[in-house]
Length: 312
Ligand code: NAD
Image (tube, rainbow, N blue to C red; front, side, top):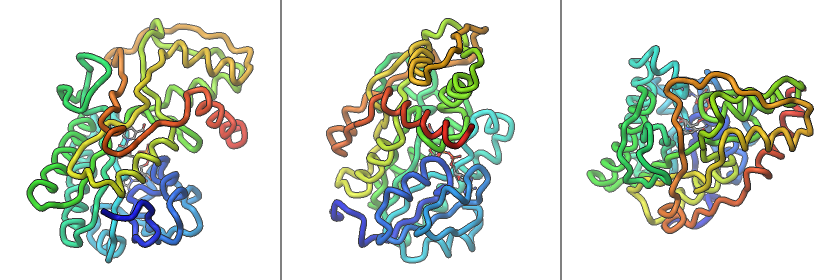
């Protein structure tokens, strides 16, 4: 087993200029030699910590990949075409980036006997049949993005079983925190905060009884760090908080923390919205020693503080 810290390791973070990857890059000890492979499609140069080295380019470009991954010990794979909507419009591109790109990385890891920690997603479950969702819950992704993630999640396990590679797939639920731009996952938080800070009505689609498991970025970083050192490899883990709140409660919390005069109003329900989502995180707790540490209120306070500074 590797030591608990990553100080002696050479680390590559794909997608390290993005929301999750840049928080991870900042959290890792600079002595571990963090490299970032990112084409800056959705990521931003200013997200990258000073000590990290950027290899700017597409994951699918062999030269970039070879340069960025020369003599590495650990790969954190965060890069992806992350937009569900875009994956529906361009499934082939989605597959090329999300599946073929990941397969190339797995091959790199195989050649170098490097550990690889992959970002999978709760999107693989589709509309849950029951909550909380365990890792063995049925998988019925409703988008090419979700299917791509399910495919790489399987590949991770297969590379462990076939080649004894140290792979781990982390199935993130709805990650949120400072630095996140509105997107498919926690867009609702960004939208509500924007509305609350500008004094507009906070718009809840439908009755607001839909539930989500929002997990703060620091806890996702914690899960990645623990995945980098665990013995329990060749496994998949749900990464959420194990608790969920309704969208209505979320709106009320944001209303309260921002101390806004905004009202909460209800608009038409969105078709295809998942009703309920909540991770069962017992497996990550048991094998990764993962323990979510940031409550939704604390996490929102930090996120709102960031928005006040950066978006006003
Ligand atoms: P993000 O868009 O902020 O980060 C993705 C990064 O990948 C960006 O910096 C982008 O420039 C880079 N990238 C995209 N295509 C690339 C390519 N072909 N080559 C090189 N770099 C490329 O998204 P995020 O929220 O930080 O998501 C990180 C990972 O976590 C993704 O794999 C995403 O699918 C997964 N995920 C995120 C959430 C969430 O709630 N944010 C939930 C589940 C899974």
